[in-house]
Length: 313
Image (cartoon, rainbow, N blue to C red):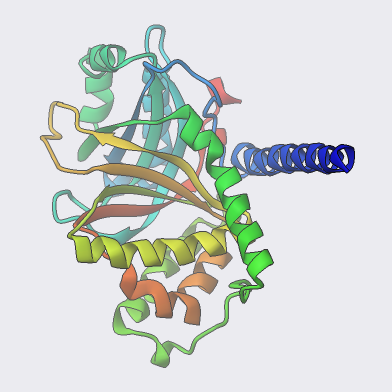
């Protein structure tokens, strides 16, 4: 009897390990192939990450935005600097901050060997030239735990397994809701995200929402927690979700000033059509009011790192 129990235990553990590896590789493949994400899975504990927001002159158009991203990537990856792990064009602002400007053109996530290495890079003349050529820029740091972020796909797998065991009603495919039946803020957001259609010629199968987050009151955190749980259920079911999560760290800079955010997150969604279906659904109309934060900036971006040419090709 004991031998049979041990056999079942070993088989169960082996099955869990294999399932975990499969889940991790599944998400990693999406990150590399769809999102153009170049984040190493393992890195030293002193590693420092940043998110840089850029506003490029409208007259320069999309080519100007890509040229600015290319120039910034090149100075980040110069000897002694860091590496770009994600670059995207901002398609639409999903949530507006009360602390920051809300009109941005592009986003870059980067990794540096240490905070000191970032500080030296940020004060360099080459960086000043690139950022100075923009209408404005904003840089915020974040501490990204390799262990926590490596476990995110496993956590989502556990959420999916729980829903299957409990036989909870699936979220996907999203159930459409007529525009006139949607809440006014949702109706407005449906119109705003039409801007994403202008980026279909670049990529239509991946959206990354980049978030700087400041939690609100206890009541707001409770409501937001319920909203997040439902969103995570949909992510677990659809095979998408967070790629980068970390503790936000303010940095001093030439023009940024100091702003108060506690968390950073970059979340992958499987494309423009998915975003339309989600915002146009009864699901988001039901849970949407629960998204309550003290402050946040959230921008929906289109991955373009592989389109910049050069170092990442």
